[in-house]
Image (cartoon, rainbow over all chains, first blue to last red; front, top):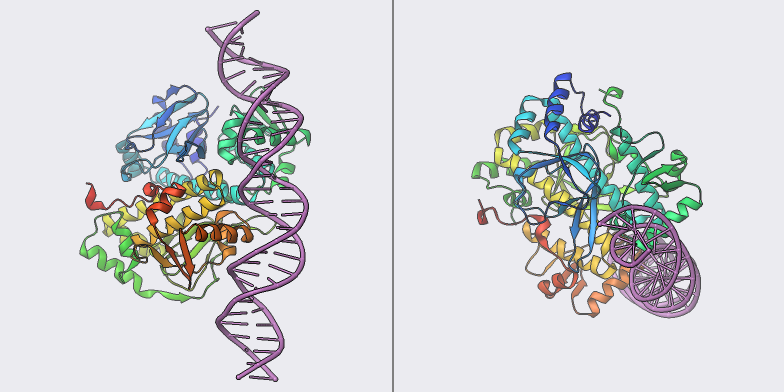
Length: 241
Length: 241
DNA sequence: CGTTTGATTGACACGAGTCAACACCAGTGG
DNA sequence: CCACTGGTGTTGACTCGTGTCAATCAAACG
């Protein structure tokens, strides 16, 4: 399995072999983190840039009252807090969902790399655009879609994003979120997540077993929930400029 | 009334007088745009960075089915598409809501300015972080708050953001959105927006008349909806480093 | 094996959407 | 100067999606 960081950044810029080897080196210092561990807490001053190399992590906001809303899923290849040096304190928290393999990079490492490797710098810029696009897509889903479509849309997004880093095959991927956690992503109660999953199962769209999600006909599910991958900006570099 | 672009960026970096005069110059070429005009359409290749100097504009996503979800409100001082050069095509549209005064800057202007004025560059970076924080806060609101709290939260956010650029006084600001547009922000039907507004009026929280929103006791309304301005990162520069 | 954690189910309550009528302007044109 | 218009805001009645609570089931685990 390829290095997911490299695989992801390939979508954002035309990397050279040298770029790749730099990224590969950065990935060496990965550490293993158990499921449901905090990585950064809201209010802290962030010190490191984190890169997820394996597993699922998330950003989440805590609301007065104690409710949580997950605002982003961090998949293999995803970065957090690229802008680390700019921030006073975190306005949200980051935690693992499954067991993860994570690298922590110092701001100086980042700035050295971006200074000497313009294509990597470009790819990192691209990452933040994709991140913003994803945030907007989630807002649109929360505001306009019903529970089942929201869930279907999430499953489609995960399929496409994981495929982009080589962590999903044609129509399935490892998926170990609890239903309660899916609820925190979609703004639904755990019970309703359960019912929505059942609906997708009974309609024959998906099979979820053994911590693996299988989407029987991805194109059909995408059509069902109106999934348009444009916001992920995955057009292969080679396709354009 | 101060230049809102300068007023906003002051929050992101300690600007010098020279920085301010550069920004003031950039603001000269503003053009007037009527209400409900498209600025950039989804799918287009963006060519210019836009800055709102007066009025309300918005980003919005169009969903299959034709529904719209507003994903960001662009207030005086706000920028769109700083990252213009990086994008292939827009994954969302931008339009005015009220009559606006807008400047369009070329990517080369931007890169020249950021190259020669590191504090402005820093402030622009800061802007994108605030933007992301706001997107996350909206996700959290859509996922976890009920209609009235969502509305109250929006009104609080607008108060604070407009105050930050000198476009609101202690407890009121010009506000000319239709209820249907508020609905597109909050993911609510126009009818329910109406009822939620009435609720806030009858509870004595707000008065909305003459295209002006008055929040009688901002602290109380903030407490009511759990508004925490942290995500706007408006701590005055002078307060820290 | 008991224990625990998470998934599933059913009954019920309630927030929010829908539809349709009506009120209230501001602007228009006669 | 006044009817007419179109766009918004306001109401009421009804429906339906989703949340809540609580019981039960299933699988993982020490």
